Image (cartoon, rainbow, N blue to C red; front, side, top):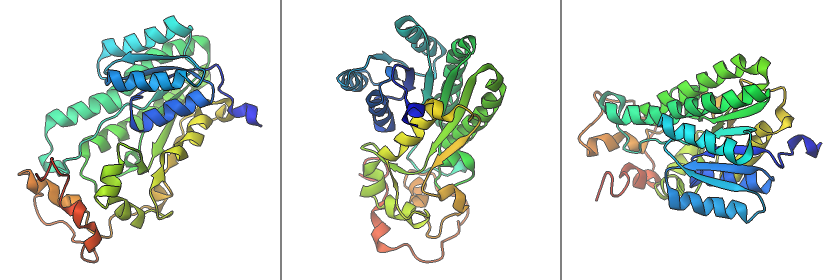
Length: 305
């Protein structure tokens, strides 16, 4: 059975690989024996991850690139083909969001377009360019890292991110069906709220983790290592008859079909930046508990001094 999950010697292109979930994924893929082409905008951080993967006994190539730029995407794919001769797996992990907490009616177009360009357009460009090589070879697995926010509305005031990830999920469905009969599988991996070094300050330091846990069936936020099994499943032959799937790793959040019980603290963040909500939102069933007070105060340096 273990051979089904074996990806030793496979060539994996992973974007957004310099920190956060990307770093966790890179190290896990290296532990599993895959050779890697790692891409991100942060050159120094990216090279450090590539070096750590190389120390595990695999080949790892770092490519500094912005996935929203067509020429950079072409360079990532070309480097993979030149270095390894093929691409077996593509993990579209690169993504950005916006933490200002601006309500949709006051969200600026420049930020909206930038998020869509990175989170959705960049993933499409990579799927398109890498997909050509996979289709020619008659095999390949593309994993688009979506989000639980791709599956419906939410209270988090991240309209650009929600729109981009929703579009990425629908793109996953389309490509998953369109390329299925030519040997290329396309699936989505949708994390819930996962603690990484990048997200820990917001999730734990501001009290967000308690709020998330209050509406998650498992009553906790996720751990980064809990994405490794689902990632290896989609990358390996264990999922050989799986395409067009959105694999949710969210502690049951999406299954719960819930919305906020206590008014989120970030609903006041826009007002701190001169962009308050228009009208009065639902106040919540109970007053905000005192333990959520740090969250209500916003992110230091962004909303407050």
